[in-house]
Image (cartoon, rainbow, N blue to C red; front, side, top):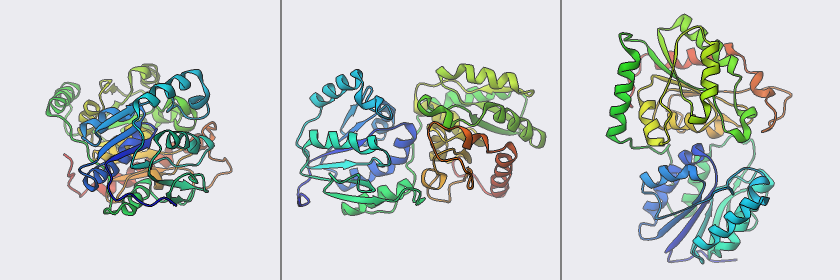
Length: 368
């Protein structure tokens, strides 16, 4: 068995995913930097990681995929993935002293891709997450038990602890530039006009195109939820939607009898963060924007389909967050099956909203 290297000079962290995955990994990168201040830390990641990791100064080199991060076999066996692999092979600089795999290996491609890059990086030592022995190629592994409800941040903490660091973790924090905060203040001042004193509630009805059906609560439910909240609260509603989700916003606007506005579509995560900091409440599908709101300390209600809010929601529990999911159902968890989300009723989500609002009534919001 390989011995853990005494002198760590070159590290490569492997993690392909979406915005939410990198928000959950921010603390890991911060801890790794403090643990190895003199090492060159590289990250092999999807494009969603770029702004977060660069702004946090978490890595020295960032190697971004173009198509290999696409979930499933299509992100591994397509012609574009082959050309992407050749391009990345030219960018990595083996051998590495340490290869760290942050992938949860629940599916076949969950271990096939890290195995491939483990081979290409030729590390002296490797460590990572391991579910059902799918991390057999690693020198050391952190066991994962599917559906054990252990938060992903705690699993990352075990890797840091194995490396000799402090395994105590919290959600990472994002520093929002003042120029973006000023833009957000100007937007809300104009948007609210003479309407003062009410709640500013953000909603994100969208989801990643790759598994939209299994992550997107029905749009008509969002419309009904707006009506139900507006009937009991003095509130203004702001929809978070990307440039590609204009149709989603227009459909929701047509369904709602009350005025709703759209937050500016931002290509920058840091700019979007500025608008989120001004919200009093955020309601979202299990997506990157949901994790962003949690990271920024916004009271957040997450609606979960096949994933588990206990494992992928907020951490630590002191962050104002509640998840809604089906605890008892005959429908199996699947990226292709939307029935789990459709069974979550408007009344269930509204009751969670009331619960979280009640919890926060007498608390001072530290993020404002």
